[in-house]
Image 1 (cartoon, rainbow, N blue to C red):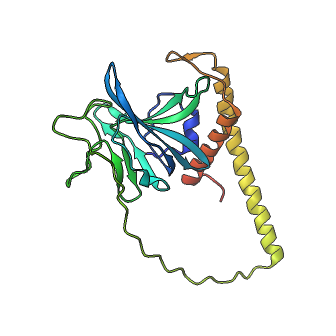
Image 2 (tube, helix red, strand yellow):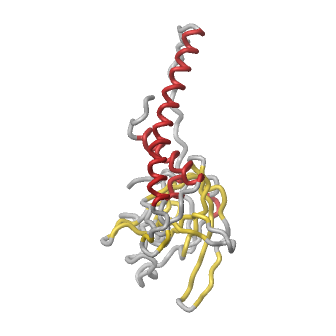
Image 3 (spheres, rainbow, N blue to C red):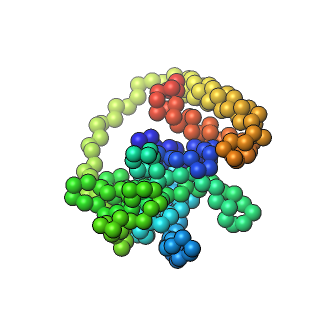
Length: 246
């Protein structure tokens, strides 16, 4: 399942499904809960950070997360069910009033894991498999399954550090090393210029259509922040697929 870089979330359409995200939990707050006309509800907020981006995560109608996960790397991913992916979405948060901020909405069908184990999910882990969430997204828990009173962090055992091979001192001269550095910097700059050209074409198409309605929502012109985030996402992806010069 594709891991979406956090900077890329800013340019997605509100309500779009996000297969999975990864980041460090920098802050986590107490869960708020209550009842309304549709029944019981709960919201717990936390913040993820990664790839130079920090984003708010709204945990909706889930078992409360333990605050011990602060500072831990987590993976949040969708349920892949008969109706497709569900559980993690891009959302425009209008709080405080008068502002619009892009956040992540995580519903009961999503799963949250640490690098080597579960740190919170819609249901308990069974010996045979991980039960990731409800049979229908945002539906109540089935009668035969009870949500855990509190999600707990499973801490992996410390791994032995690999032995580093001896470092051989370089044999090149200072002048030759400086030329190699200048050449590498030039290649990197040329790669980034190509990335900016591609994203600029995207921005032109985006701005040309900003007045058209897409699914009942008016698309807004791409901001400078969106342009920067898109460049970062394309740069990261090109590095992953070997599309850069170095």
